[in-house]
Amino acid sequence: MTDSQPDSLRALVRVMDRLRSPGGCPWDAQQTHESLVPYALEEAHELAEAIEAGDRDGLREELGDLLLQVVFHARIATEHPTDPFDVDDVAADLVAKLVRRHPHVFKDEAPEGDVHVQWDRLKNAEKQRASALDGVPLALGALARAQKVAGRAGRAGLATQAPAGDGLGERLLALVLEADAAGVDAEGALRRTAAAWEQDLRATESAAGT
Image (cartoon, rainbow, N blue to C red; front, side, top):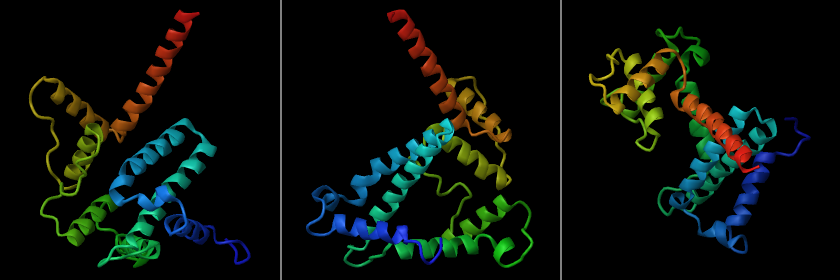
């Protein structure tokens, strides 16, 4: 971006401020961090769909919708009575974190082994975590969470064998571990396969109705 071009991000912050302020949009003014959670999740899923569909226009639009969630939450955060912050604070924290967790780039230090292992080590030290498995969101889908745990465990040198048994849960976990070992996103693979299957079902349904 050149100096002669408008600062679109600043314009977005100003628009959000207008929507949230008195005389703005009543719906926007009523929202809270909690009420916006479903929208953030929905936008993240729509972004994933656009990426997997190879939809460039959709990708651009969904990135904007996800950015709106960031700006919206940051605007709400400015109103906190004792611990306010704004989008600049969010960005500054992110810049500091990226620099801190990439010493092999910004401090010209050789990475200590795999960069993913180094990232986990630095993150665990920052957050004072007792376990390498701490911090994996409980709200993640079961497949995604299982693979996240598997990845963390593997990088920490923990055994990642599936538990014994031939129940459905054990078999599903074994497939997740197989996907993780192969570098395949189990959640994404199932989502894409399920989408193709759904299309086939719809085509069959349509053909049967003609």
